[in-house]
Amino acid sequence: MRVITSSKEMQQFALQTRAEGKTIGFVPTMGFLHEGHAGLMKEAKKTTDVNIVSVFVNPTQFGPNEDFETYPRDFDRDLALVTNEGMDVLFFPEVSEIYSENDLIELHVTNRTDVLCGTSRPGHFDGVVTVLTKLFHLVQPSVVYFGMKDAQQVAVVEGLIKTLHFPIEVKRVATIREEDGLAKSSRNVRLSEAERKEAPLIYEMLSWGRGLIESGEVPLDVAEQDIKQRLADHLKLGQIDYLQLLSYPELLPVKGKPEGDLILAVAVFYKNARLIDNIIIDLGGR
Ligand code: AMP
Image 1 (tube, rainbow, N blue to C red):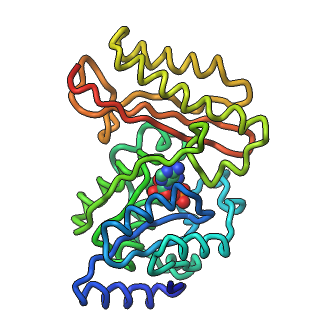
Image 2 (cartoon, rainbow, N blue to C red):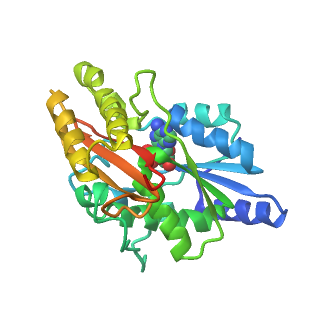
């Protein structure tokens, strides 16, 4: 496996690979890799000829009071995991390889960001699409792999690719969970023992919520309130940031008997970590 740290070398490698007629799979990450990331890599191995993982903690997607400086990092462990998954390249650039003081352009997302993490983390998705656009130009992917744990990110990336006409396919990959249901996340290491014990409640309540919504016993807006209340009643250490039921991937309010997919999405604050999770529900017009 090859480690590339220079943007120029990354792009040369990618252009050469594409010129040879091979497809490129790309898994962008912020590192501190776990089995959730490995799930994306396994999917890439099945689908694309040459597979590239990036590890880059992107400063522009963190707010001023967020955890950019303290975001967990462990390059040696990441290198071992990426090698073990049989990836071809690990792209590991310094910030100065991606951003320059002379940059002229920052992208701004105009849709799908006035809800969920878009409201809680102003500017977050602008940073995400700005870095992804740069990375797409460096890595020249045919297919990009994103985890549904960050379902709003998937919705925004699909919009980015469509809006800017990138010739790239997006593969949505299912959330990988711990045995007790907690979604795997690099930030889980920041939970105290007691918080870690409580955190599986989040997915438990989402699953209970799915049952309530699918039963059709109460209108959708009532169901949303009931699920939020039930989660609030059960959480002793965590605080709900949001819990919302929306259409997916449009992320619009739902009314009546929706035809397409719905997302029940939640974010919970613990002392040193904010956890997110979601469930996609297909009511099929019921
Ligand atoms: P991150 O390193 O947190 O930016 O995540 C990089 C990619 O891995 C994103 O597409 C995430 O959605 C995905 N990912 C993170 N955790 C999981 C998980 N538990 N299951 C599936 N995908 C995940």
